[in-house]
Image 1 (cartoon, one colour):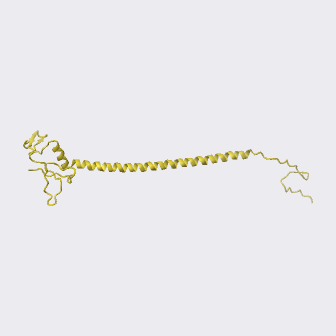
Image 2 (tube, helix red, strand yellow; image 1 turned 120 degrees about the horizontal axis):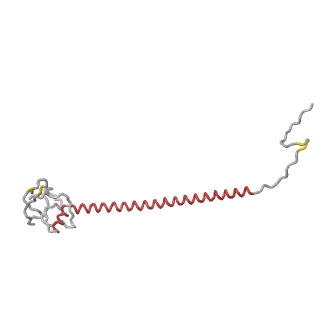
Image 3 (cartoon, helix red, strand yellow; image 1 turned 180 degrees about the vertical axis):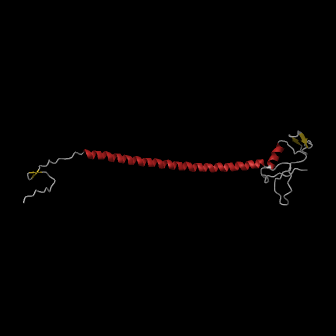
Amino acid sequence: MSSPAVKLSGLPTTGGRPAPRAPLSVVPATAVVRQGWFILALIATMVLSLLATLMINTALAQGSYERGRLVTESTVLADRQESLTTELSQLRAPAALAQRALALGMVPAQSPAFVSLSKGTVLGVAEAATGTTPFTVITEPTMGSTKTAKATKTAPSKATPATSSTPADSKD
């Protein structure tokens, strides 16, 4: 019985003998050099990333300090605005107005007169002010009655600031 030979190895055969092999040789190392440049590029990318992160964190920290400074400045300015508003309210108080009027030589009117622009008439009879009647201004609250007012010829001094901002009726 004759059967064809089964080829078991992948090597070509020439009449029952294996074909000669090529001699072994050393592979050049150029592929390793290319991997070295790749590793250097990765390291450079990592260093640049770390530097960028450091710069961003530094900028954020600087922004945080700037924010803190601005919050402090805002608080100081809010306090200044509140003190100026309080000072303006004190200057607008009737007692302060009376003091400035007296300093300018003004006296209260005895009988006021008004001009009606729509009718073109004078309402009331105006009399010359004599200066004998002092300004009537509430300068201090009284314990006895809320309707009584302390009449002063001069407005309160800076030692006793005006505590009421409502003027008394000037009907005499």
